[in-house]
View: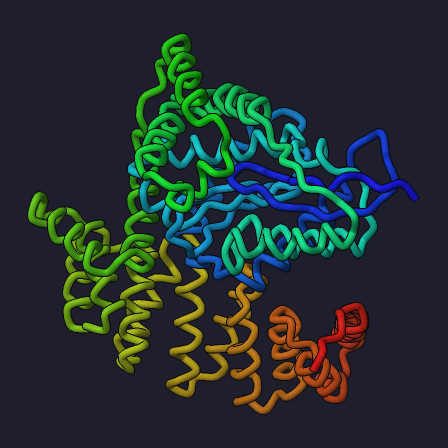
Amino acid sequence: MTFRNTKWLACTGVVFLIILIFPIRAFPISIQEEEEMGREFMKAVLKHYDLIEDPLIIDYVNRVGRHIASVFPNRNFTYRFYVIKEDVYNAFAAPAGHVFINSGLFGAMENEEELAGILAHEIAHVECRHISQRIEQSSKINMIALAGIAAGIFLGVGGMETAASALSIGSIAAGQSLSLSYSREDEMQADQLGLKYIAAAGYSGSGLLTMLKKIRGTEWFGSDQVPTYLRTHPASEDRIAYIGTWLDSNKTTVKPNSNPDGFNMAHTKLVAVYGEEAAALRRFKAAIDKDPEDSIAHYGLGMVYARLGNREKAEFYMKTALKNRAFDSYMLSDLGKIYFLNGQYSQALIVLKDAVQAIPYNPDAFFYLGRTELEVGEFQKAVFVLENLVQKKPDYASGHYFLGEAYGKMGQLGDAHYYLGIFYKNKGELRTAMFHLEKASEHISDPVMLEKIKEMLKEVRKTGKNQPKRNL
């Protein structure tokens, strides 16, 4: 067997060390192999990091990202966009079209142009296959190892230096050496392609420049104070100069986003719920002082007070926000959630029933309506609402749990164990999942359902068998 040097793999925003032992190949990994690597990488991310799952935030970011991706010709992957709950300035693309942005970087943005600029650059890295240019086919076990390594270096598990040191020991044991391989040329190519297609998506491209300047402006003396984004995006000054020149030479008639409501709502929710509390209070109070009719600022202030546990003020500001946005699904849903958590179930039912009929479809509205119906003893209604939720949003994990609870309250044990089995399977608690699925098969007679349970049990047993044993 021939051995290759250990390589650094970087995909926009993050550089990660790969210790690979594999035969020399003259061609990059295939699309299918990269997709497998992407799945393994996601497992590692979910194990170590909290992803923001708020529908208002995530649906918005995905809407912008997928719109930009749609103008790229001959797309290799189906894109998915995530927000990591981290205050560090960072964004990166993982294998197979998984694109991440940290909440800290999103919070620093001021408009959709800036979000679009960062996302377009990340998408360009994926489409250029910069990952597959740097690694060749690896065995499955090494790709799984790669996912864990990627999480450590991409995201700084245990600290960038600690992770790198641990991996250096491993590389020495394997007789390998370390090298950096993410080039300026890669960054330039991603900028060029990103700017070209962001214009086709209807943006000016100026957002990428303003974000790079913001990130560059946070750099202080000392390598430990350099923003993560700059550590992993080489030649930032050259990039700023190039993008500025491109913008001067490619002046477009694209107007600034004429409908900033989507950005403002998502950004407000992010700042209110995940930002620093005192700063968020000052921000929204100042906005209300400037414009007492600013519904989104009232919404943000209401969410901050809800976060602080001041339900009275939260209710006041949320109701004020709704005066001019009476049919806003997200605002109604969040007010209903406040009532639910405060045990005010009659008020919660009124508001949440309005929320589920409003546009857009909001899974949180269905979730809290289902839970409220469960609390007041309306089990059949709870089942109806939560069935709607898991059918339209099968990845809404808690929906399966409370649907199982509702069926259990109705005495339908087969359905109860079935949905609890799905919940624990998706959570990775395989023993508990197996228990519930086996119990479900004892109570269910429908052959279609039994076949589904059989397939899930097969998958759970296979996954459990392939999981590495832990030392006690």
